[in-house]
Image (cartoon, rainbow, N blue to C red; front, side, top):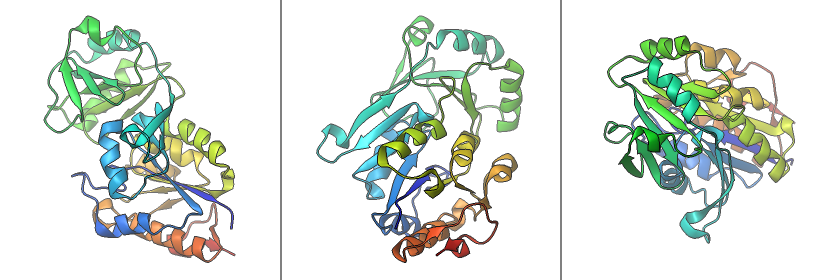
Length: 285
């Protein structure tokens, strides 16, 4: 049986928008055989990701965080249970100076890997994990970072997206979330680019890759995978590029994918790439 790689987004895919993990999805991940390499690929920070890795029973392997800007090797014997094996940084000053003009009321955060965030102002409670320190503008832009986040709680996601598009971000990788939330990464960095490095490291053939996601920051990952699955709660532009659309996250839409993939792997079969059908029927001897 060839080894397979399953890349899973967290929020809106594996857990609902309240951050809740259902028993069926948890058990689906935990019951996957060793021939399926499960790699979490999330926009979350390290500190926001590790508690869910524990709940999912993922102690070893790899995780992609910060929308691809950092990759972790999971090891229960390592300090904090992981080692950072790759990170990509950029100078935040040019883009933040531009966005300061385009979005003057936006809250700004720059990530400190494994620690938390430096912020321009306090973010809504519960939105940033780890230490959150209010600092001056000069300190925000002083050092290279893995990610910049802008948040404007008082406007809708649609209004915010329009403002971002009018700002004309060029030479950067960015994604607008389901709320008025913008993540900016170094150019060319995405979940897909980080997963390709993991795929090569674990020796999985490209045709044996599966990815599941629900948001615009999952687009590159769904393109990258041989079989890309969009959640039922995904925007139309995400569904449009997926090979399959499953159910809503609130209806355990990921569970049939996990169960079908596990059933196929245990039977020595693989999911077939590029055929529109029900997930559990997309098997090939």
